[in-house]
Length: 321
Ligand SMILES: N[C@@H](CCC(=O)N[C@@H](CS)C(=O)NCC(=O)O)C(=O)O
Image (cartoon, rainbow, N blue to C red; front, top):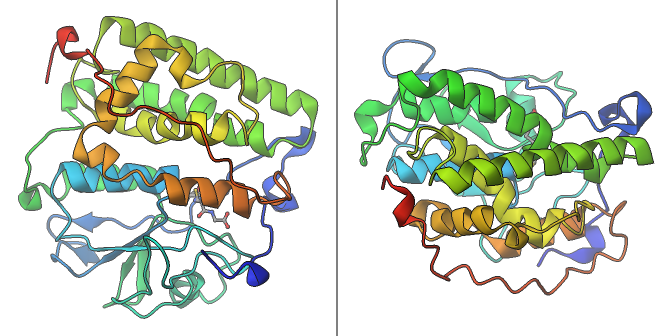
């Protein structure tokens, strides 16, 4: 547990809000790619460090893909303390996190300011750091999974095509909609400062969940009845939903356990090491409930819910492994 005295309560600042009380996620600063051959950032195993928080759903996607493809040795990880104060993400000892034993950073801000001394945005995870050029390669979470899947095939220890060429248009279309309505929709609901902005986000979240529930009645996976980038995008928000978003972000029309197909689908994925093994409910719950003091000023972390993640999901009958 972090030293509570030094923790302030951090939420979105006015620069994150558009007119009408709507939360707008900040834009990416660094969009470099580690390339299979050539380029500024060559594919050198063990050279780069991936900085993550286990609380963060965008980091979770990268962690899932890294594990599914067996890229752990290629891309070592340092995990931040889930409690973030106004200095941003920090690397120190605590349950499930450590000091930065690879590059010696105390705060993620040091990497941002080394890359661009004039940087004035938010210091966000996930971020990939190159110690050789002392630059952040990328903090674009949506690029990162595609980069691991398509540029680093020579290093995949578990060959698996999560982004098949024939399915890319459908995956890209669904992912863009899921991002707007669901993955970022829960944040728009939770960080809204007007009733109207909150209700518009809430309606988007549940419209998207209804659509996903209908798709998953017919098919084990979201696209092409095989595991793809679309499932990797959906899972981090689904797995956090009942523990955090339904309460903390007021997305309370239904819980995931109330949707038979979505709940079984989320368990189906959770029961695989790349999904369940990268999910840390302690970091997730302490981060949201203790870092957003404008939403939860007491910083009390709910004990529940009790969810049976090991219950049989019964989805094998829908086909594809
Ligand atoms: N890098 C992405 C966003 C990733 C992101 O928002 N990460 C959150 C954690 S889930 C973060 O690091 N926030 C730090 C902050 O807001 O100060 C972007 O720029 O849109």
